[in-house]
Length: 374
Image (cartoon, rainbow, N blue to C red; front, side):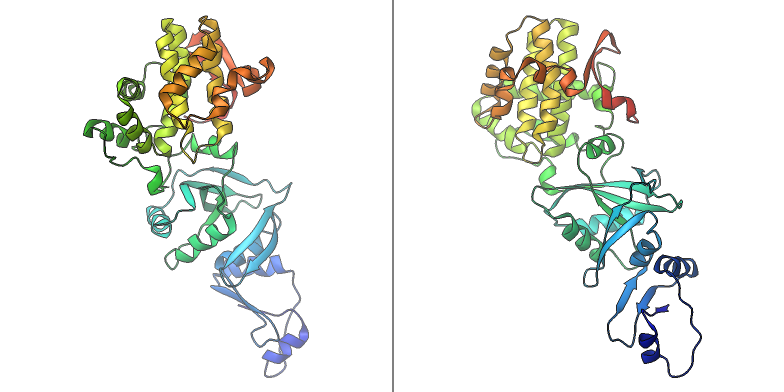
């Protein structure tokens, strides 16, 4: 479909008299989408112009929901911001096409700027639904550059929207859907110094069983798997522990972090200081993963501190012992948690509630969980 910015641009292209009409850009784009046009050619005879591909035409058609900031003709990337009254919704996809999943995986192969990719769907007030890939980006990664690279690598005919996920949206969505792609650094690999059964158990954490894990009833099979791993870590020598820490990828870190929170409930149920030590140690191990957000780790450590106080376990001694076990890179912000002002280390400060009586064995419940699907 052809479009012109003014009458002079039209006359430069037309060989003779031609009928024309003036329409708004979004209205023209909507017609192009409905008619199945493959592109919108702007001022084909100059003096300036270019072509908008199908994705860009769709973006232009959706300007009642988005403000289009810029279109990069080289990469094909459209930069947009959601308008405040657009009714934009983003949710986990229940029917993400398998072909598109494979396209995303191929596009991300070898990419070091993306940690995980999630299958999502977006909807705006017009009712248009788009398959969307949500990206958890590595530190310092530039979202527009990554999005443009992904779209450029997709096979011909495959299109999707790309959004960068930041907290709390990332944590909220990632709790409801498993990733369709994870970076190689996110996968626990075989590391020299670890017995095969330990490596196998770390790898087994990648099988998608983490969704909804933090709020499952005690005891869950994943609790037993992680309990075995943490026991092996604590009982191992320093060479074993160093190899174990090296093997922890992001998925294993998230599992250990969630296990730590659940140990706060286990400790209260069993009146067990040993469970507290395992929980704090697991959390400190998780925190050493470069891709982990310290703010998330602080949220998870608060129930362990509260549980220690209820059991009359000295939190300072507990955290010092866990830091010793977790190795020289144990984060100082966790070791100093006890030094925070009482109000800033309270359950309420981190959106936790203590359940009395416990619910399905859980003594701690995060307020975000009420809004999450299992």
